[in-house]
Image (cartoon, rainbow, N blue to C red; front, side, top):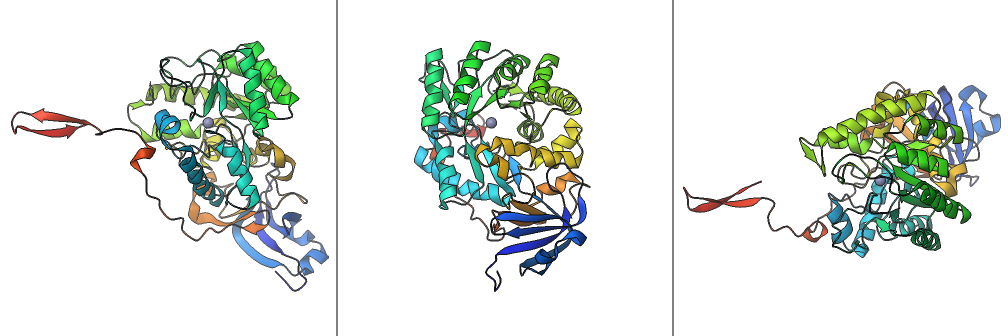
Length: 455
Ligand SMILES: [Zn+2]
């Protein structure tokens, strides 16, 4: 603040602007109000901006970059440990409050925008609106509803003798009429993005990940109806067939694409469709478990990570756009902790430079947040002042973006985010999780005539 009533910042340090352009070693970013006013080399700073009375932050040894845009955050999942916990137990009203509490952690991690591609009930839409209204602190959100699925898609995870649970982050469609109705209903209910479950998934499917959840025609019907209503559509597509069909149908971006083949890649390149690989969840599964994980063995996840590394590094080499997403919201990827891990994976698995990885998590990712896409993602004059300042040089070591202690400043629309006041730990109720009596078996032991618990 200053006497002239202009509110803003003049921040100097190393500038990485998120466009993919090389860093400016001695750079300055000028913020006035909620916008970026100027970005460039210090010696080229215009006189009137040098003289303007602003808050001055001289930060040698720090990097000034756009706030992260995480293309894959499930704000309503509450760090669920299982499909049952997500779909059956935590009541919707409580889950909404939990989402508000978690949104703050996401923002504090330097994520100033995010896309939520699949929500339980319609929590993401309301959370987006509550954040915009100033009721809740969180990133700018793009919201999808429940993902549209079939019996062959992700989310139809429960036995066939049960009703499809209304709390599931999916909606089951059984006919082409259902498809049209589901899209129209979601648009009525305020989504920015329609998410389609295009294939099955190693986490919940026994057997190989193959085939498609919809026919090629049905993917086309989905994409056409979403576009007719002026929204974007994305798809969970792990298999080669589902990537081919959804690329042909004109989906706006494709999630995962781990097993994409040559034909799929050619379509993605021709139509310039970005891919959001989201290996963070799988890599975290491999790091966290031994033996079994979900419905599959760890070998299945290892195989997918290896396939994705091969197929998506080729995609990157040939010019496809890759976008970072963390899949925060499951217990494997707690909110606020792993949003920058996908940047590391871009370097270690997809053959990107750290500069390219930052672009994948900022400028390239803006497209997944449609209502602000042209105003976020890069440090460009006129865009919203969504800025992350970290201590150190992520171009030397991309992993430093994961360290909370290196986050020195987060601005969202020119307003500093409180990084210091601790977020209180929460109590967890047993009814959020399951109806288990005992996590193990209480075995009879003849030698003592008593019992003891084994796992
Ligand atoms: Zn997801």
